Length: 110
Length: 115
Image 1 (spheres, each protein chain N blue to C red):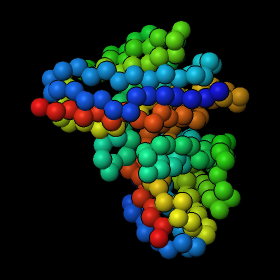
Image 2 (image 1 turned 135 degrees about the vertical axis):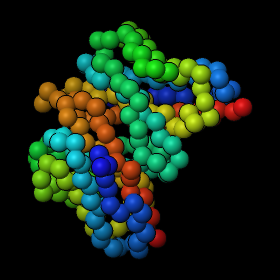
Image 3 (image 1 turned 180 degrees about the vertical axis):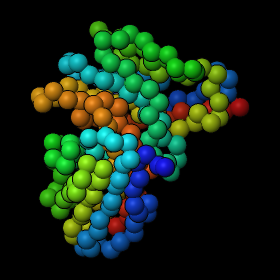
Image 4 (image 1 turned 90 degrees about the vertical axis):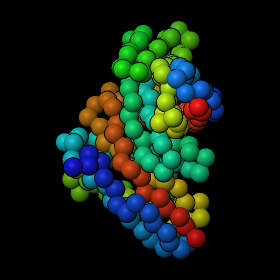
């Protein structure tokens, strides 16, 4: 009965590969987000979707492509992975105000 | 501009109060949040306050907001070893579309609680 869930929890891959991270929320929220946390723990928003529509797209390389098949799901596909993409990626959801976060996906690019 | 600043480290003795401070720069109406992150875990929402409020209390947590100085603090009473974690301050300013969609985080304060 986890509120915001992400898969996989860990992802280790080679440079140049393409990978996807999935997120699901069962809170009935309209808005979902992707955040990136770097090795110094700094958190920055990447994307936000409201009811399947993209509303925030920060300065993120176009190798990153979010996709929201329905308002309960927001996936993140990353093409041509680079060493600098290694980070923890957090999904979150909200209904107007407070954002609730998933457990994170730890991505390591070798 | 949008910027949130926090001191990076705080060390307290078990049983004492902890006060974690944060300053923000956005001048629009905004929500202000405190999140807790334990090692290897996600972000746990602790509490939040709207910028027209001065204070909010929830059990051992007290949030104080000084709107004039754009200063936010989180006080943890009777700090326990389980409170050791990184505490993030974040603001969510009102956007042009009329929503509070974007969290801008501080760098996090690492709280260490020792016996």
